Length: 128
Image (tube, rainbow, N blue to C red):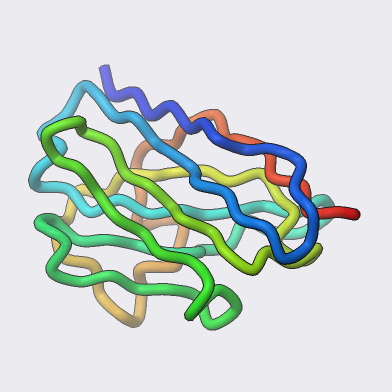
């Protein structure tokens, strides 16, 4: 069955960096777009970034552009989210999700309904 396992969350000071990982199994990883979402306490889950197959296209939420970088290693069936210049507003549980499409659309990649499977999440806390 499809499994997504996130890791790398931690407590970090403002301005710090973290790298999240999402290890995937149970589906043809090479052909699927993968996304990172996050959910802060009391807020809805929101799209952070999405990467197409073969890294042809990557989208980012405006709130993380220039600070976060998403990548994928198909040989390891793992995606990463490199997070720099972290802010307290980045505090959230981060989830990865897999879609049935390979090339995300700019107008819909951030919608939860575009994704079929989710991991259990990893907690990121940005605080001094």
